[in-house]
Structures are given as C-alpha cells and as structure tokens.
Amino acid sequence: MKLPHTGRALADAAPVPYWLDRPERPDPLPPLAGTHDADLLVVGGGYSGLWTALLAKEADPDRDVLLVDAGTCGWAASGRNGGFCAASLTHGLANGAERWPGEIAELERLGRENLDAIADTVGKHGIDCDFERTGELAVAVEPYQLAGLAEDAELARRYGHDVRVLDRDEVRAEVASPTYLGGMWDRDRVALLDPAKLAWGLRRVALDLGVRIHEHTRVTGLARDGGALRAATAGGPDAVPGAVRARQVVLATNAFPPLLRRLRAWVVPVYDYALMTEPLTPAQRDAIGWHNRQGLADTGNQFHYYRITADGRILFGGYDAVYHYGNRMAPELEQREATFTALAEHFFTTFPQLAGLRFSHRWGGVIDTCTRFCAFFGTAYEGRLAYAAGFTGLGVGATRFGARVMLDLLGGEETPLTRLDLVRRKPLPFPPEPARATGIHLTRWSLARADAREGRRNLWLRTLDRLGLGFDS
Ligand SMILES: Cc1cc2nc3c(=O)[nH]c(=O)nc-3n(C[C@H](O)[C@H](O)[C@H](O)COP(=O)(O)OP(=O)(O)OC[C@H]3O[C@@H](n4cnc5c(N)ncnc54)[C@H](O)[C@@H]3O)c2cc1C
Image 1 (cartoon, rainbow, N blue to C red):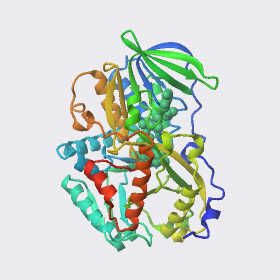
Image 2: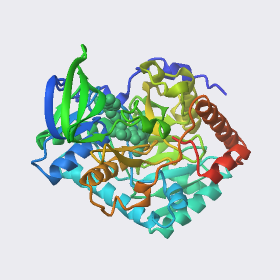
Image 3: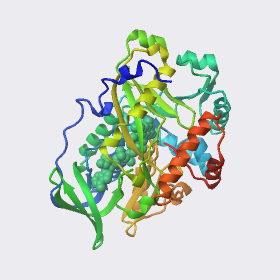
Image 4: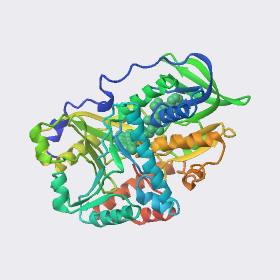
C-alpha cells in the first residue's frame, strides 16, 4: 500500500549519507607520492584498518605504521552505517551458537570484552561519538515472530545476558508503534554511536600515536620484494604512482575488489540502504515515547533497524539487501528509489503518528556478505599479510576484534585468538557467476516469501540451512 505522504516526505532528502554530510568531517590528508618504507602497511581506513593501526601502535609505539585509503578514512561503510555497535562477534548469538557450539561461550565473552574495550577507548581518548549503551530492542510485528523472540531470550539467558521479554503493552510502553506485538530488550550488549564521528575519532587517535595516513591513495597491486611486500599505489586525482615497501601488510578493504584473488570466492558486496528524518519536534517525540533510546530491529528475514540520533532524528534502514551481477559496485548504486519508497512506507506504518515528518537524507552503502555472516580471517605471502573480511551487516564492533586477530596472525605465534575455530575455519565459498547471482536472487526471493508465509521456509532455504549456507545483511 502506498501511503499518501511518502513521496512528499522523501522529496527533499539529500542523496548523501547524513553522518558524512557534516562540518566536523576532517580535511583529507595528502595522497602518497614516491616510495616509502614501513614496518606495517594497513590498506583501508575504515574501522578495520583504523583499529589495526591504533592497536599496533598502542602495543609497540616504535612500530612504523602507514595506512592508506582509496578515499578518505571512514567514507565507506564505516561512516554511513546504522551505528549499532554490538558485542556479538558472530552476527548474533543464534548464528554463533549454531556454527560454533563448543566455542560460543568464549566468543560471547570475547565479544563483551571487545565492546567494553571500545567504550574504554572512546572514553580514554575523548572520542566524541555519542556512545550510548542503551541496548537493542528486537520487536515482533507478526504473531509467528513471538516464538522466535522467546527462544532468543532463553538462549541469551543461558549465556548470562541481561535480557527482558516484553509483552504487547510493555513493548508499546517503551516505543509507541501500533505494529508491535512483543519484544526482547537485550540491555547492555549493544551500544549506539555516531559512526562517522567514531571513524574520525579513531583516525585522530591513530595520527596522535604516530600512524602515517595517506588518503585518496589506492593500492593497485601487491608483490613480493625480497623479505618484504611491495604495494603499488595510485594517489590523488591524477593517480600519481607511488609504492610502499613493508615488512607486513594488513588488508582491511571490506567489500571492495580484493587485492588477493582468493577473497573473491568468499565475499559478495551487497547494498544496504537507510533514511534519516529531520529532527523530531517535542510533540513528535512525545508521540512515540522511546525514552530509553534503545536501538530497534524487527525480526523478519528482511528486517528494519532504526534508532534515534543525538539530535533527535530517526535513522530507519535495512529491509532490502541488493546484489548486482558480477560483484558490481558503483556510486550510482548507492541510490535506489524503490528501496527508499518502501522504507518510507514502512516507517510511516511503524509510526503513523509521525505523518508529515520529512526525511533529510537517503543513502546506501556496501556490506561484505559471506555465507556464514561473520568475519573470516587468513594470511598470505608466507604470513606477511593478514586479512579479515565478511563482517556482513555487523562490523561496527566486530572490526576491532578482527583487527586484534589480524595483528595476532602477523605475530606468527599461536594465541588464544588464532586458536579459535572461528579464526581457523573459512566460510563456504559463493559459486562463480552466473550461479552466484542466480543463487542470491533465489535466496532473497525465498526469504521474502518466508516473511509473507509466517516464517515458513521453502525447500531451497531448508537445503541451504542444512549446508550451513545463507544470505543476510
Ligand atoms: C548502510 C549500512 C548500515 C550498516 N549498519 C550497521 C550497523 O548498524 N551495525 C553494524 O555493526 N554494522 C553495520 N554495517 C556494517 C559496518 O558498517 C561494516 O561492517 C564496517 O564498517 C566495516 O568496516 P571496514 O573497515 O571493514 O570497511 P569499510 O568501512 O568499507 O572500509 C574499507 C576501506 O578500504 C578502502 N579500500 C578498499 N580498497 C582499497 C585499496 N585497494 N586501496 C586503498 N584503500 C582501499 C576503502 O576506501 C574503504 O575506506 C552497515 C553497513 C552499511 C553499508
């Protein structure tokens, strides 16, 4: 059903990520020119790369760390996400418990430790990113979803998590939506933050610690160079050639075309979209409650995530997860009218009392989906290069853990992290095209159908479930 006010609500939305469209955005650092040496070269200046550089310097201030990004630090997924910073390292407890039953208790402990450490870094370095540990409220909007919430709550309690199950009236008392039938509030395992300000803050801390950062510098290829690796670079608008000769390299390039061929089998770029409203008036705020400022997510396969910002806007994203044939990525794919219209309609269905509210921004970005929905890790070039990828839609917190794993892998010694099955085992690969696109489209179609049929999964999804394969955002 097309609601009458969605077109008007979207009419003036700027086609750029809200978070990046602010005066706090730092000026770009100069591109790399000439040939440079480094102990550690970090390729990619999103959270993965920034945490790697920062943790490497904290552990050893004498280590010469150089980071390059093809754009500016945090311009990609790290600066345009929903800002849900979850403790889970496994794209949710249920996914982790199913895949690593013998290890999940330890993974949950490590995840909490990771979230605590992010909070500590934010506090210690005065990173002004509106970090609020308000938790996440999962809501059922169809009766069949209530059983799933109860199961999730039982599983969470088994691992000692502080969760509260809410009935229809209780959940609507938290947040006033006529669509809510029940909820589960996971109270301290998710923080909300301002994603771009986190990226810019980590960049500032890395610079303060002595990391050399060059922006608008793309690594175009890697090769052995004696006992080191040589990264060829192209810098600035004229793609001035340069090079870095480094003893060790970390690849933190997420969904972008990988510099290691083998990563193409494990990661597909998937577009995820979000809307941001203008700030709500006090009357509009009163009309929705939401005084505890939790992150919200509904629980269908095609789910929405939404949250309030520090200045009282609502970010509303998710639902569609769009793959383009041949792993295609392009700036024009960051805008998708059909998805924005659907999101706007779903927004006003969720909050009919906000009719008349307008969206100020609409955007999309790419996530690095893998078949197990959480990061995998590895090394190449006789252990001189480490990578982490496949965070899918839950990398805001997990990328710090990924950075720790990559540094441990480069250390060459076995550590409690490198011994984990999660770290040692790879996901099942995606097939090459055209089977890749066909399989993903069939899976998306089946997931939408399951949502429309009270969660009932068809033969295709049940087969994928048995193989431990899937598609998520
Ligand atoms: C719309 C959207 C909403 C999301 N919401 C959430 C959320 O609420 N919670 C959550 O946990 N996760 C969310 N995510 C996912 C999360 O943002 C990512 O998992 C996380 O930011 C990944 O960080 P990263 O550093 O690995 O990747 P990125 O931030 O993508 O950084 C990779 C960097 O590598 C650089 N690069 C690539 N190739 C090269 C090269 N050859 N040379 C030099 N540089 C290169 C790129 O320029 C880029 O800056 C969302 C993602 C999107 C797109």
